[in-house]
Image 1 (cartoon, rainbow, N blue to C red):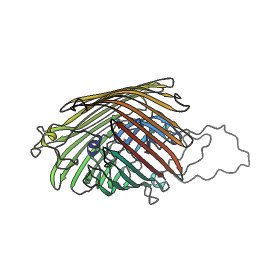
Image 2: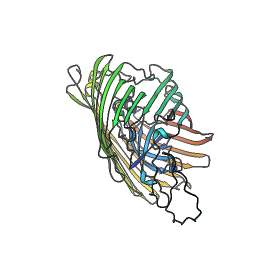
Image 3: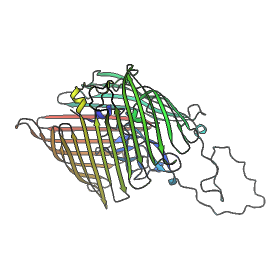
Image 4: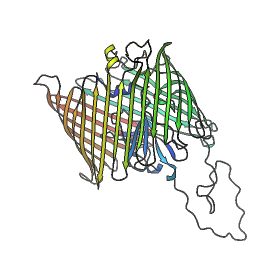
Length: 555
């Protein structure tokens, strides 16, 4: 069986999320989007020095399937930052939303001025400004000022978002089956009525695809999310969402067409529930076939929410027949510095109507992440992931599973990443091991990154790798080169690998494979960014290639 990343994306209800909201006194939660991809698996986000982002800040990326992925800022520019994620197999397309946690203490306070004695004929002080307006700091005042910050309903109406066009032309094995065209609109309106303090959101797209595996190749209009959200802050503890959305406190339950309501207690604890329908995970996102009710509780040690755990229960019906009983348990420890820990498990409870599972309780999915960064010297990431198929009536995969596959299939994976910095050189290694119901395998990669090696201001990566895959083994090396120029940024990739195919005849089981890639990012003016990429793979007498463009305008 093929446990590909597309299967991970399909399990919308089986997703990792460490997104307990860390927003009050210790951290400021800045929303963000992925704006660019890097060949080495890193991501560029649209937050930088202007937003007080620094190297080492924690990032949480939340794709539409709710499978939130933790990461760390490793480079910072004026308006953008580069994020390295713990799970390098995660599917995170451009436009994926998330947030970065910025300590509120980083906000610079106004300097203390030397007080002066006013002259006898000095003008009387101006009247105090209305609540919510910023009062100018004066000597003798507290350093953080005397007026409170404006509440959500007192802020001006703002609209942020993007419009985008993406196209890929892919040729592989004499087929054009993976080519596509996407154009979409994604926006949020804060305080849309000027005094309500809520958020109106929308994301829709038009898609044309030649995907061979799809039963509905052709055109689709996709509505990814639309709705309204209000509250959930210390000012307005009652929180509610309505529309098509991921529940804020429990996105692990998946995309929902319906409503959610919750309440935030004074100490930061949150309780909530939701009702609605789960859209099908296909091109059209059809709904109203799977009804669900869910409830959850998220405990926080204090209002900083750096230590928290959550418990949720979801009950589903497939076309009015009882289907799934799912429990989600998650926890995290997220200090400002030091080790970070996060874990989530999805547990299915089976009854007599579930005939293919020979147990009452099944760990459908589980994962854990441990991470540590030492400023300027190195870091460690360790992750574990377990997956298996749940026995449910709802169809979450395009293919039909045999009873044996449904009953026994599973995969466990353990990954380790470490790096150390000496001067301008960053040495790194990545180790991965996996096992399933039939076999096991793994991968090892060792390499280094160095600045100014092949050009001033450029970064070069040289690495060797050995991959023991499901059906083939690859031993190879790669070189990456990335640099920023006056017109934008260019990243190049070259890779050579010796591939051994298992189970092939002796005269066709070994081959050399070459891969070359390039990504160019540039500012097109008038708010438009352009990302152009090309990828070519050559082996024996065959080849494949992909060329594409991604244009987006932020507003």
